[in-house]
Structure formats: C-alpha cells, structure tokens
Length: 103
Image (cartoon, rainbow, N blue to C red; front, side, top):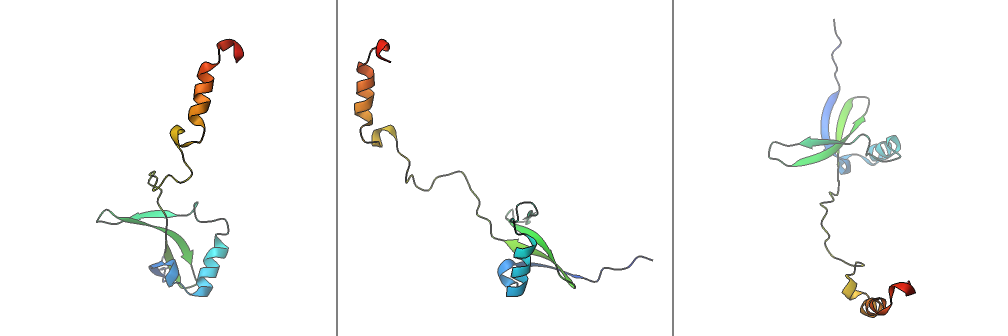
C-alpha cells in the first residue's frame, strides 16, 4: 500500500512568502537560481519562471521576477559611431596620407 503525499502544492510569488521564508529561500540558493529555475508556459502564450521551495507541509513553486534580455538596446549611451568620436576624421585623414613604408 503506497503512502499518500499530503503536502499542499502552491504556486506563489516570492514577495508573498513571509520574511522568514524569503530568508530560507535565499539561504537554500546562495549562488542564485539559474540552476533550478523552471519556465512555466501558460495557455495564453505568456510564461513565468519558478524555483522549488519545500516546507514541512507545503511544496511551493515560487515565482521569480526575471528580466528578459531581448537583445535590443534601449539607448546607445556610451556607444559611438566613428563619426561621433572626437578626432576620428583627423586620424583617418592622417592614416590616408601615410605611405605603406611608413607603417
């Protein structure tokens, strides 16, 4: 006769856990969640990420906020085209004037 698992199973947000539970989750995964995180796909095509967390009476899938890198730059702060670099035109002109022997 198999024993029946009587633990509750819940999906909840990390922010909905008690402060003590949040501390336990952080202690359980001191190096981060990357290795245990699972993607849950919803029927409407959206998705969310969860990590497992277990207490004496409950098995949780804890939703974790994840910033998705879509590969697009929102702004180009710190990135310059050649035309934007001060003196780039002068350096290019000077390089054009040098002969192959001067390199």
